[in-house]
Length: 338
Image 1 (cartoon, rainbow, N blue to C red):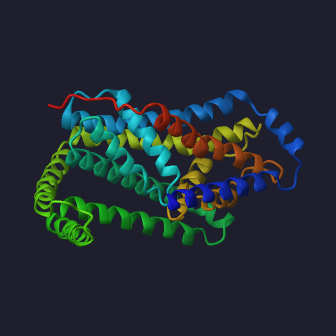
Image 2 (tube, rainbow, N blue to C red):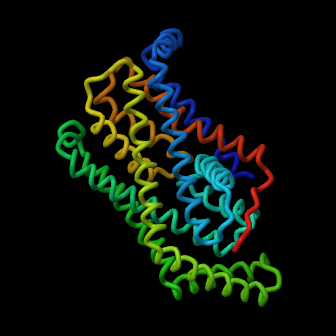
Image 3 (cartoon, rainbow, N blue to C red):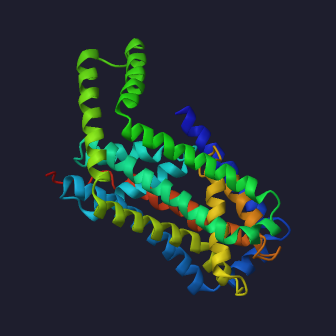
């Protein structure tokens, strides 16, 4: 409970900081007048790209779940996705999303070991595609950003190192059975000593059985090239949709001189930088990263308003719609396993 209030406080401070940046140098009235002049078509299209981002993520989850268990309804995958979006937004390093999704999938009838494998593979695909995508973009646009942003490569390298470390650790967990077993046994023994686990022998046997199934499921998913190709393609499209949102916000402000690929690349780098900020929603890093990269495209008078719109579309929409899902879709969508 205490940690939950800390996260709420951090989000409150981040929101205050966001509005301070947006209002800095202009009055509330002038900001409102500026927002009223935005092109509704481009603004709406930017939000539709965020919806597409959610749908494609649900498509990745749905494809893997159907392959393992069958009988999954897309609505169930979408609900699990939005639950993850909400808890990713309110926890540091987005650590709360997967546990919440795991609980939701188990309640819907997916075995715990199967749900763990699905989420692990999905996470691996996302992180790998994000890293490769960003490397390709950096090689393509490095000269442009290197001239405009001091220590650009330093920021990019930190993002790549953090994401590569996460990928390596996840692969180690997924493939090295003995390593995973020793790690979980260590945690299990600690919980048993603290009297948190009841029926130690029964729990240990369940742990070993679940671990065996987890590695079997993970190996099965990675061996299916069709599923891997489909989910990788969906993830590439998902990231592209997300990275294009700032471009359409840019167009909504009436600007049209910047190259869409430059703006896409800028958002890819902001995402990489934000990934190692240890605050809910990457608060502080996201706003700072947007200012650092997108001041190249927006005017000083519009950058604060653009940041406000971008953050509402890409972060607070996840809080709002994910929160509604958590509040009003309490009953899980059941699946029939095969």
